[in-house]
Length: 334
Image 1: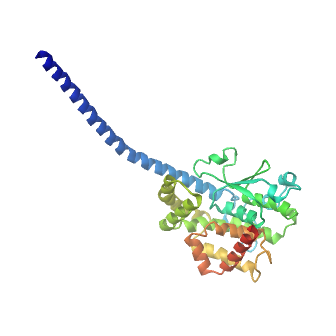
Image 2 (image 1 turned 120 degrees about the vertical axis):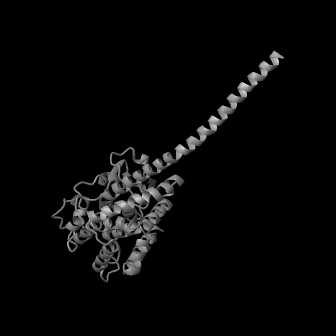
């Protein structure tokens, strides 16, 4: 009897201990789940900050130290209020001349490290596609940037050719043009150089304030970026909510920085300047696109799926030129 009661007592202790453990486990799980909410929010905010940093860095990636208002629209190379960045358009040294000398284009062995919808990367792709130069794309993770860990330069585009690394879209295009056209960049048309500078100094800076000008457009922009870059679900959600909010905020700072009052008016003004410059010619280069055509096209193509692009084409006359250039690039790529 005593033994039986003892066993019952032991069983009672074990039962109470087990029940307590289960209750503690449930309570711990519920607490953990509750704690995960702020952790998840923290991760989203951290991701948003990363997107913010990436976007701001990319916007500044190839920007010379010059304010938009210091650029004389009628004479964009009149850069008296900023720094001289002629080296991007008229090269003092071209490391590719020796590396690619006597090589056919299909043996250049180009690898392009990029973001798909980065306007600077789009400029380079437009040039490569138009001139039918084969290349391999490596899409850089916008947060980790692990794909370019080999490089001290942490912006895109980065191009590696025969072991030679080139940074900055305009330097890349200038370097390749000397080989493809068999012409030194110092021999290129001054007007072409002037409008290439206009693209980098002024036109490209109207893009972020427009595509992020409202929360609705900012969210749509990050949806577009996510689709084009094939982001993961968490990257999509982080970009869509935290990233879009961050860039909506930073776009206001960019407006002030570049003395932009009305975003659409600013990009419309640029489009009108380009239309006026082209005049009755099919292209800036005459019968075929030149480096200025490809630069303007590249920047515009980066936002082709967004409302800003549709508004520009619908309200101005730049559409026919854009389609002609696009068709030329597609025809060359066949």
